Image 1 (cartoon, one colour):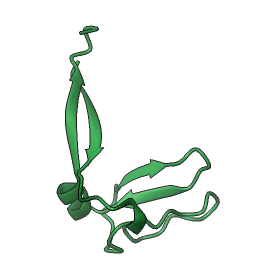
Image 2: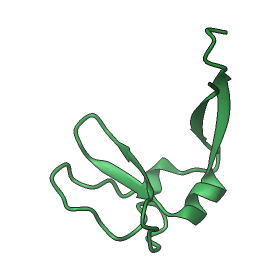
Image 3: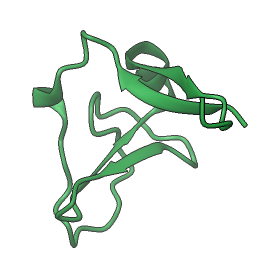
Length: 74
């Protein structure tokens, strides 16, 4: 099985991310551009329970993936 790791492109500005509070209900807006979210957005959580969620255009423009192994221990 091939494994992938998500990576944020260099132009991703972590200072623009609007992290939710750990106990907040989910927002209908992208944490980066404040645009509308798809039904199933990319979501990331911090250890304290705060979350960010990205719309499809932000994922397409700011996130990439890399192969990190083939699952065979290689």
